[in-house]
Image (cartoon, rainbow, N blue to C red; front, top):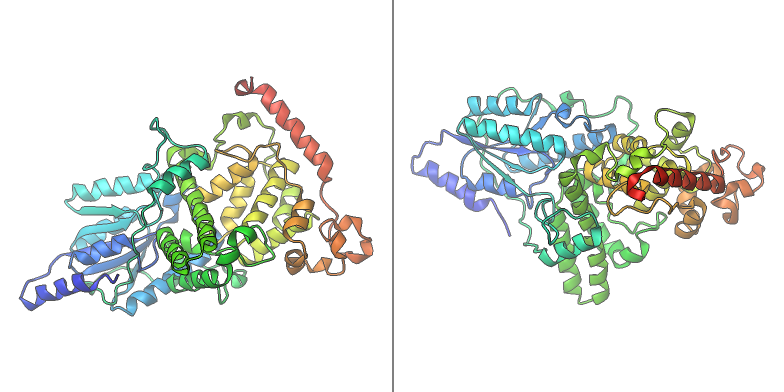
Length: 500
């Protein structure tokens, strides 16, 4: 399906018959940095009026979870890619910074904006902001239209039989899957209405999104490029090379069998519904029930993403507080420490953990299985509060997503909805041996272990020290730290009325 031509033709007809087009409409880009399958863009074009495409950089409006350094780097390149795509169609992305409401009101006053279109965002601070902006603009007689351009199902759509939010994923997804209706994604418009004159927009570099030192240069590559085209390249590679083995291989960090679409989804360079439609259509066209099962497994993971937003919407305090109040009595460690710094820098002396933390620092990404392993070590063996880990991930992941990051850390710590039980503590040695059996992942990021035999690779302290003189000794003993964590858990349960 191609959009844009009909609406553009309507605009041209207005001019041909002498109509004066005095008003304009504004599309406010946010987490939807794409032209295809963008419902707010489609509606804006369909208005038939001159169109302003705007992005407003207002990180303070997202406090206390303003974007981190790695995601800002990705954002810079994604905005540049979107502007390039718009210019190919006779448009441009107008950039602004400061108060979103002040910018929008200025554009209403100076550019004759009569309608504003956007796709919804779901973080607590931004929901409140958008409600305030919508009320203010409508109070001035401006039409405001918002859409779902992000999720398979919006957070308020799925409820239990009693009308309450879900706190367990399996029944939530069962309900979602029964309701899932995927329309064919619309194509990017080939032409777009021109923009009126817009004053006071700023240059991309003035947003200062890139780090002063180019520590982000390892983030990008042929199959990891910000922008809508990059998202399509990544999706194509996943479909062609990895999809057929996804369910069996998604836990293997040594193999490229995951989609690597998390950053593209976080910035809306591609939509979850478009990805699902594409993969399901591909499986159905193949006639392979096995491939369809692989796709179903992947779409279920997109369902986890929706579930995270469902929880964040209904329990907005979980970004900073335990969803399970029992854990308010847990004896977490807080604040800076040598142990926390060693974990952050990939110097714990535990290979699968250090490989993951170095992958994160070097690439802005970490394999999902390894995210669970490093989180388990931090919150359980090390006894450090999950918020310390959540904040580090927030600053270093290009796919830093408030809903998914919060849900992932609370799940790992045992304090969230449908969480991993606290007493399930990952053994990083056995996890490494199971999911990195050849040691390729560990050796990729820890060259100090190049001479350690494979049988000792995931527990190098069992090999002669001469094989790894530059690699640190483990910062803790796994068995005793596990026992200490379980003892702390029992103390918490004894102190908690809910446990009695």
